[in-house]
Image 1 (cartoon, rainbow, N blue to C red):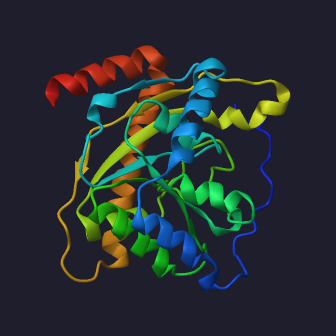
Image 2 (image 1 turned 90 degrees about the vertical axis):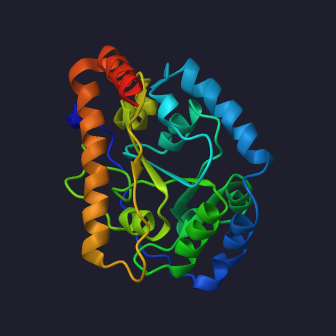
Length: 254
């Protein structure tokens, strides 16, 4: 229940540091795939995800093994990217708020495939980094709702950023639902909810030549969020049994 959720701290939305502060992180991510930190983190978080949260992923056969890919999950907790990555072998880059990039953790984030975005600004550099990753056939994870849900419920509308990326790149977008993670923030209360991840049917967008309008980007983002809502509702109504059956139906029709 949403009433049981631990309240999140108020967000500091804008980062006062100049854009040049983050150039080195973008340069590292554009130049190479995630390093050793990624694999070490994957092992450690997989132990936590499997052991404490009994995480199970369905529909993993829907994840393309190669080529430019944007994985689009809902976002309730800081562990969502770990839950999402637990069931797949592709290395996933993530865009994270620039406030996280402070010494000494900035080096860990950068080597682990995470790059900054300056929220509240039209961060051209962040989008250039996304382009570089996708142009080399890489994979990024992007939350189309923006930040974590404050209510434990899915947002009504998406942010336009993911739609812009989909239309500018022509990359495959994979709607993904993570169920149960809204209560991960209740860790201090001893809550370790079961986490279920359901990967949906890949969406394939034709690359738009010329500038993508905000209206086009918003429409694509909302369509992606609608798919996430469908997947989430499957688990709300049918739990893991429903998620498994849904994944089996997708596999038969693929």
